[in-house]
Image (cartoon, rainbow, N blue to C red):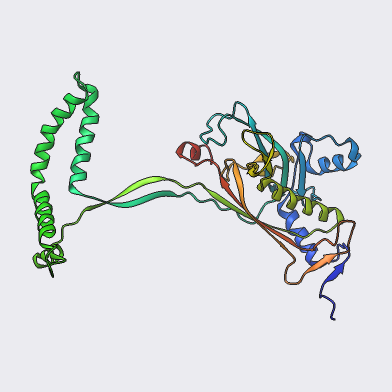
Length: 357
């Protein structure tokens, strides 16, 4: 039996594919942890690496790719942060409109910092529906509008306003009498004659003979705003054993955040095989390091409200599956590609768009 076509290669800076991936990431990416204050990303990484593992006391789990940060560059470097969020009862944030977030405190339990993708896309979509409006509906709408405008001015209340406006409505009705009469007469004839054998389609034939068609007005009605969705694609090509472990942890972190777990019933404390927890959320930020290596949020790019990770796909290998030499976990793949789809919990309105969303 032929052996499977899988190659094991050592971690080496001479590997051209890994070299190119690393150079691409370093040219666009850098990571800084808020826990380290104003230190540069390189110094922060060095300080964390120098600490014994048992003494590293971090408020949250921190993961980054790539691990090595190029220093001394005159141009800013860019990266993207995914904060894994758990919700708990609390005051909440001002401006929360969603029931999901209202009255909840957000706690970041993990932060994943990745190189900036080649491009980021954001779409805004409002929903409209084209509907037919009959003459009766149009006139009734005018009556309702008049009543609502004048009811506040009337000392006698809604009934008096309705009576006053009804007399005005009669004039509008008479002015539109021709349209109403045409529709009523054709409708009545069609109902009466259309039931006779062979007389189906009488209304349409009558209109065709006259070379005229009576139609309803078509109006475009606003129906709401779609929630924005975001998709990111990352390709990880580790160049060290440490990189391989970090990539594995990043994939696990995203998977863990997007999936629920079994929990106790809503009323009882017993674990139920029908009750699931709600998955964690994410806060996403586009960041960069300025010339002084201070972390800044890039306000030229759109802000993103809190999101759920709705879809995730992971691809191990590329044109040909290749793995590095095995370690205590297994044989790490040379190439891991991840596609992440996020959807915002809240909709973005004009007020939010003016604030950068």
